[in-house]
Image (cartoon, rainbow, N blue to C red; front, top):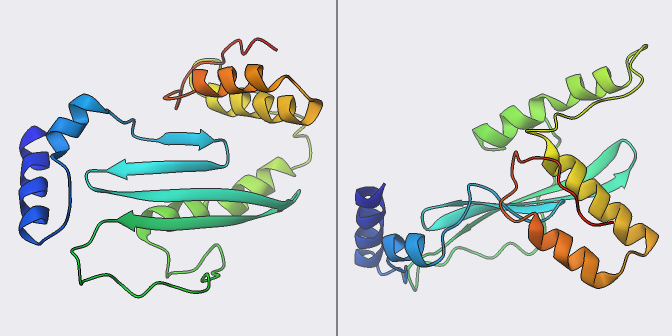
Length: 170
């Protein structure tokens, strides 16, 4: 990994991009494979770039799923700034391969959630804690839990991707 990060740093700097020493950053400010800022907004960092996801519910059966590609570029090579979002259906072939694969599961998941005989879903205590933990934080906001407790619980969840269900203190 160190040699990759070294080469990426050198090559981006040679192109004029203001990129930090990625090996130094990995030591001084390590990041997780997924960085959650709240349950509906997360970053997927990769070397000197990242993807940003924000999911906003529109109702019980729909949401606005925003996907941004964030990267550095050399001065003078900045791309045109989009002035309006591009709206695509969930099954659009214009999405990159990984989101397209993720989205292809949505109709099957929805069908299963509405299947006759499906009464409830149980989360794994060991690997799906993130879902439970963040849902309880949202419930805390909705029920008026003290802001300092909510902040403390949110900080506790940093790096809890695929983690255990935690005691949040409320």
